[in-house]
Image (cartoon, rainbow, N blue to C red):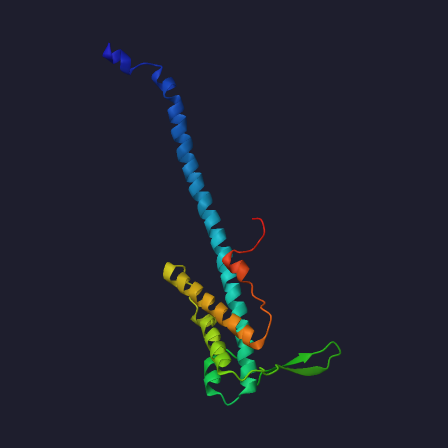
Length: 183
């Protein structure tokens, strides 16, 4: 009778629920992994874009301040050496064509302060976010280095803005996820 117990036609029916559970679990795991990878990539791209946008914003501010600093003290070899590779040749001015077709020369106003601390902070902020020195690799060390440098540059920019009496125009909330909207 033991042979009859192993060929019971109801064994398949009795284990039907377990078999469907296993199939559903396996298929759900595969689909979840795929969806998680897709969502992870899109979130990663969005976060990377926000970080590079912030580094570009900080770089632009530091570049303008460095050019304004050169206008105030053109003999400062330290400032010229620190920003020479990233600034266009010539004085800190540009020619703009107005709506009437006439060309006007726009000069950046020199920085009002002669503070050596200001000069040092501008140089350091500029060096921290210079695009040629920022890594675009996607590994833990490179990402941590990038985040540290941007965070340090944000601190330097805050110090510079306080010294100059400028209003902060930062977008740190977008980079650090502190935005107050519903997601």
